[in-house]
Image 1: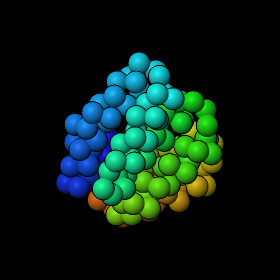
Image 2 (image 1 turned 135 degrees about the vertical axis):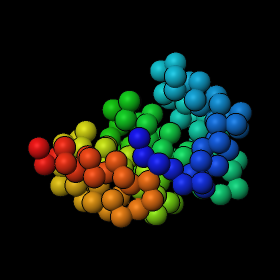
Image 3 (image 1 turned 120 degrees about the horizontal axis):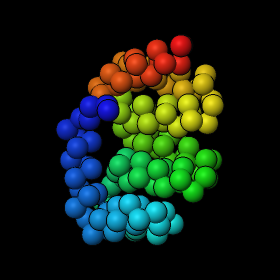
Length: 130
């Protein structure tokens, strides 16, 4: 698992402590992904700023709903919001890898190796090469 920066940890805590975030997490755990997205969207609307963790959670729901184009957009937004996060780059690389878009996965993993929290990307690159 990738190491998260302090701001990522604080944002995750903010999302997990908010009633909408808690509802979204509960719906996600129960497999009610549409309801989870709705809760995360409410949280996104009420937040004073964009939080990458919200987009990550929405992306995870969209992956499970087999809506890859929307999932990709959400995961790309996490990278736009936290461009120095190896963790979010790895999440995007994992998405590309699962979609068999290996060149894109490789490029994102390579970028992640240069960033805080991107240490797991080295192992993921080695797996792509094997």
